Image 1: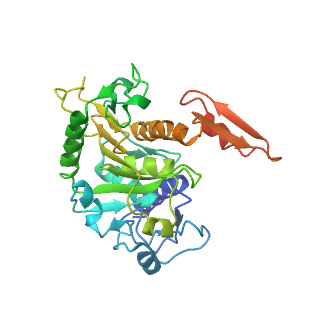
Image 2: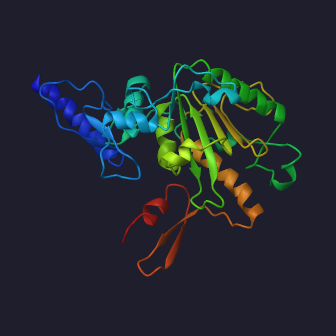
Image 3: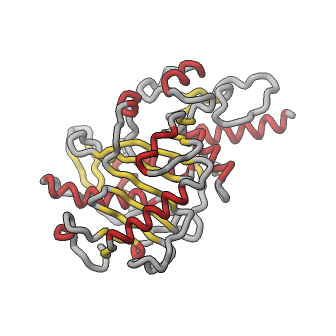
Length: 319
């Protein structure tokens, strides 16, 4: 029994290191077995605005209006405008629950020795630029530089992919929703909604986007941009404009991204980045694939580079 408890304790602490901003370890209660890494007897969720203050379980339920899982969104009508009617919606869930669901429900997901979640993205281990499409429609067509990078997609094909994604999402037992912000400046930021069937995707965008405060989430309203991630389900290669069973389709007019046939999480980030590259110049703002770091004296350095070359690492270095 002691050996089992130690194993569970070691796994919980590994998870804790990866999500220390969201969870705290609690006292080990006698010989009680760990039933869940998000069980309130093990971890207590924290208010984002008060990282040093614990909320007890009852207070957390009142604040977030969740059931006893502390993560289940009770109002399943949230996605009705999109034609999605799930039995369970996990909206802006805790890191601990997303870890747990990934390990429990998603093939190949494990927790690494450093506490990070290792997820399996299927056959696609990176982005699929040749399968990315932009909808060609009258209100935005003249503003897009069409070519080998921005490949045209008929509106009808986009709607076919969108309906295919929604049909798939409607077959899932549970869906994950992330409502958060893209862009730090309130003047230019967008309200982004991510709808996905995988906890790993929700965790990725939980980290990628700016998380709203409790008040901002309560008053979130309709999103400015919606991502339908049905990457576990393939596109129909016979749909006009498709060249494979993978499709990443972006509509500037509808402010929507539809993902089929790839579970690589980076497609969501790049889709949002593409939208900002389209919108910002229209508002007199230069968009850059870069990061910035402010020095101790207020001096600023800008880091340019290809993906994976260290921009974020350098910009977050306190030295």
